[in-house]
Length: 526
Ligand SMILES: Nc1ncnc2c1ncn2[C@@H]1O[C@H](COP(=O)(O)OP(=O)(O)O)[C@@H](O)[C@H]1O
Ligand SMILES: *[C@@H]1O[C@H](CO)[C@@H](O)[C@H](O)[C@H]1NC(C)=O
Ligand SMILES: *[C@@H]1O[C@H](CO)[C@@H](O)[C@H](O)[C@H]1NC(C)=O
Ligand SMILES: *[C@@H]1O[C@H](CO)[C@@H](O)[C@H](O)[C@H]1NC(C)=O
Image (cartoon, rainbow, N blue to C red):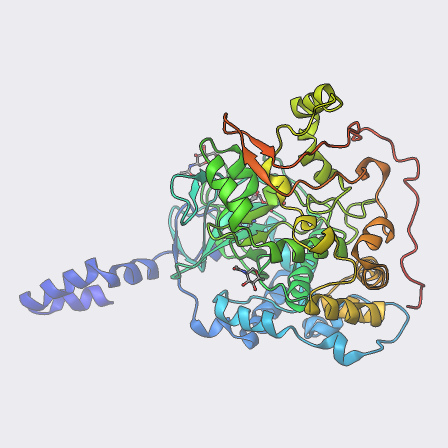
């Protein structure tokens, strides 16, 4: 249209037309002639299309979700009209405190509005298995492959293409891990926006590792996603907003940017995460020449309030995967803890496994040097009469016992932490389920039981006794704290005080004789 009009005008004007075509308009004109990505099977280059600004409202999110479900499944439209009907049955008891159970999270809603992610869901009860997987796999393959197309409203890029240089930590770069689970990880942008998120796409029909076709346990992933949303909300309510990256379940409409499946059209909901700023403690540890920076961060800059907050949260949520690859630190010492999906009962017979909790496997591993040469050193020298101190991993100073009076929290929780635990302790399991979007009783029971125990027994008492309890292979004696580090003449860290670990063998192969044991967390009607 525009092109033919241009050819009809005067010489002067046609020159302007040509310029306009080369500029901003060229994209629009080109794109309008391209096939829509929906009409392609693979598309090797998808010209992005900026979603309408109105798509970031709550109403738009509800409409998009409904449209998606209608389009992708034969489900009758009425069935999925609102959150109440999709929320999984909450057991025989009536909701006791419906107002509390249905209360939206205001922090989440405000953050969703500014996130700019179209269709982002803030109510976990709306996250449904049909949303997070392709349901038109066979039909899609009947469509032609396109070399170029348009219609993508999300732009995915390879997260592993280059090293990340954290702002303010120039010269120290790190690579993101590939991730162990089945989700495919990317950087993701809303088309036309420069704000970068980390997007995890579950239910790709091909395996990330070997490319073979794979089925999707979409119900399991839905639960993982909801679990992460619940923990963000919990952090908000316990006065620790921002300690974990905010996550949303939102539409992804993009092509795979690279590799074997380049051009594959992702057209279902994924997990959008805020990107944790800084670098992981593990990344710092393995970077040559970063020892001084790491020493400064861990011994002077580190936000000890956040360490205490996350320590309490790790026990409260029965966190079972807190190791130093999941801990980010910024140049100013601010901490973010990622990857919270192995918590609240997901790992069987694990009450907690965190580098922040004394007696946990990860806590002991750090102090025994993963049973390598460090332990050999302490075995050899530790019992000599003049022994005082030896080499140590400087990450051990990240220990709440170093930051609280007498090395004990006991019942001295931060006020917001106490009030969130009080609310959990006092509400019915069914209400907790509904408020946080859990589909089974277990995570709600864990939160309720841990809250009661942590309030009554104090932190250390609950750490020692509150169910769920871990299988023996996760349980160690509490190592003594080492709260100050000095660098020796070879620039290797030592504990500044006399410090000697309690030597225990690695227990990874210890069989759990009690594997059928089930902790009673709360009474059935509680
Ligand atoms: N929200 C996030 N912010 C920053 N980096 C992240 C975030 N989520 C994941 N990553 C990076 O991606 C890597 C793998 O992600 P992860 O969620 O641990 O995958 P998986 O659960 O499959 O193991 C992490 O080690 C980290 O480097
Ligand atoms: C389209 O591309 C995919 C992936 O490269 C391939 O498997 C498929 O056979 C192609 N389809 C057609 C019709 O060429
Ligand atoms: C694309 O993916 C391949 C592996 O499939 C990888 O080797 C390469 O570095 C990637 N390139 C870019 C630019 O992301
Ligand atoms: C440490 O974190 C807490 C909780 O997020 C925050 O309120 C405080 O300002 C931080 N302290 C510093 C010194 O940045």
